[in-house]
Length: 216
Image (cartoon, helix red, strand yellow):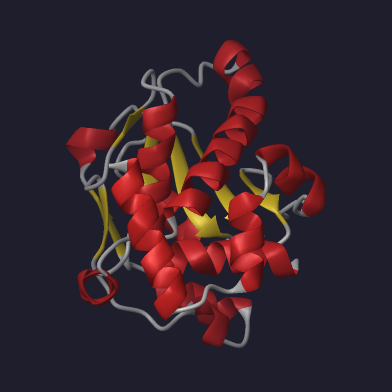
């Protein structure tokens, strides 16, 4: 299978030359990625954390390759790095704050957008993390997006972003009641999306909720 995949990639490279920076990221080791991309600045809401700075060119290229091209090589590397980052940040909570058996939930896409793209990049990242550590569990339908909204980056201020997302998510009480939750997204911009998702989960009975993203 790997030989067939390699042959397909070779033929595609001849037909559609790859972006040089995407190829560079594919060939970087995880250690090179960690040393080559600056870590993200702290997010004002301490419940949410990101691994890399989105303004960095390599970081953006990697996110775009995951988000728009489903680049599996980059998905694998960045999911593993995010997994290690999450473990570093939740170990104390698991020991001292009863953050036991957390349920991984990706930030969902609206059905229309999901149909157009064909996949949810945040869901792909969660699936990779669950492959890495089978002690964790995830749910891909406990949280759904029921309202189609304009992209947050198109809105001018925080109030518009809050209004845009209000009531856009729905949570299934039976799946998340009394559960600790780890929300996963590809990018945190202002944290408004995470906050609305967390609010929805909290109202449905979730316990502690924290969130992580590849970049901020």
